[in-house]
Image (cartoon, rainbow, N blue to C red):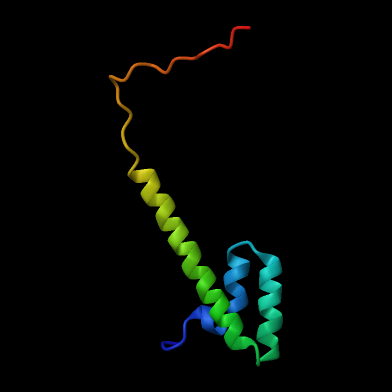
Length: 82
Protein backbone atom coordinates (compact mmCIF):
# COMPACT_ATOMS: atom_id res chain seq x y z
CA UNK A 1 0.00 0.00 0.00
CA UNK A 2 2.73 2.45 -0.83
CA UNK A 3 0.71 4.51 -3.30
CA UNK A 4 -2.47 4.43 -1.22
CA UNK A 5 -2.60 5.48 2.38
CA UNK A 6 -4.97 4.15 5.03
CA UNK A 7 -7.55 6.93 4.77
CA UNK A 8 -7.95 6.26 1.05
CA UNK A 9 -8.53 2.54 1.55
CA UNK A 10 -10.46 2.69 4.85
CA UNK A 11 -12.06 6.14 5.09
CA UNK A 12 -14.40 5.05 7.89
CA UNK A 13 -11.40 4.23 10.12
CA UNK A 14 -10.45 7.92 10.27
CA UNK A 15 -13.77 8.85 11.82
CA UNK A 16 -13.85 5.91 14.22
CA UNK A 17 -10.30 6.77 15.36
CA UNK A 18 -11.30 10.39 15.98
CA UNK A 19 -14.27 9.33 18.12
CA UNK A 20 -16.99 10.21 15.61
CA UNK A 21 -18.95 6.97 15.21
CA UNK A 22 -21.91 8.45 13.33
CA UNK A 23 -19.68 9.94 10.66
CA UNK A 24 -17.76 6.66 10.60
CA UNK A 25 -20.96 4.75 9.93
CA UNK A 26 -21.92 7.10 7.11
CA UNK A 27 -18.44 6.75 5.61
CA UNK A 28 -18.70 2.96 5.95
CA UNK A 29 -21.99 2.97 4.06
CA UNK A 30 -20.42 5.15 1.38
CA UNK A 31 -17.46 2.78 1.25
CA UNK A 32 -19.69 -0.27 0.85
CA UNK A 33 -21.50 1.32 -2.10
CA UNK A 34 -18.18 1.47 -4.05
CA UNK A 35 -19.58 4.32 -6.15
CA UNK A 36 -19.34 6.80 -3.26
CA UNK A 37 -16.00 5.45 -2.04
CA UNK A 38 -13.96 8.30 -3.62
CA UNK A 39 -16.20 10.84 -1.89
CA UNK A 40 -15.77 9.09 1.46
CA UNK A 41 -12.02 8.99 0.92
CA UNK A 42 -11.91 12.69 0.12
CA UNK A 43 -14.09 13.51 3.16
CA UNK A 44 -11.86 11.45 5.46
CA UNK A 45 -8.73 13.08 4.05
CA UNK A 46 -10.06 16.59 4.62
CA UNK A 47 -11.19 15.67 8.14
CA UNK A 48 -7.79 14.22 9.02
CA UNK A 49 -6.02 17.27 7.60
CA UNK A 50 -8.35 19.65 9.46
CA UNK A 51 -7.85 17.90 12.80
CA UNK A 52 -4.08 17.95 12.27
CA UNK A 53 -4.15 21.68 11.64
CA UNK A 54 -6.29 22.25 14.75
CA UNK A 55 -3.86 20.20 16.88
CA UNK A 56 -0.93 22.22 15.52
CA UNK A 57 -2.67 25.54 16.22
CA UNK A 58 -3.51 24.44 19.77
CA UNK A 59 0.10 23.45 20.37
CA UNK A 60 1.38 26.74 18.99
CA UNK A 61 -1.01 28.77 21.12
CA UNK A 62 0.05 26.84 24.24
CA UNK A 63 3.77 27.25 23.63
CA UNK A 64 3.78 30.84 22.38
CA UNK A 65 1.73 32.57 25.05
CA UNK A 66 3.15 35.90 26.12
CA UNK A 67 4.69 35.64 29.56
CA UNK A 68 2.88 37.28 32.43
CA UNK A 69 4.43 40.58 33.44
CA UNK A 70 5.65 40.17 37.04
CA UNK A 71 5.76 43.97 37.51
CA UNK A 72 2.23 44.68 36.34
CA UNK A 73 -0.08 46.03 39.03
CA UNK A 74 -2.85 43.68 40.13
CA UNK A 75 -6.18 44.11 38.42
CA UNK A 76 -8.60 46.28 40.38
CA UNK A 77 -11.99 44.95 41.23
CA UNK A 78 -14.68 47.54 41.00
CA UNK A 79 -17.86 47.37 43.00
CA UNK A 80 -21.09 48.87 41.93
CA UNK A 81 -22.26 50.96 44.86
CA UNK A 82 -25.93 51.78 44.84
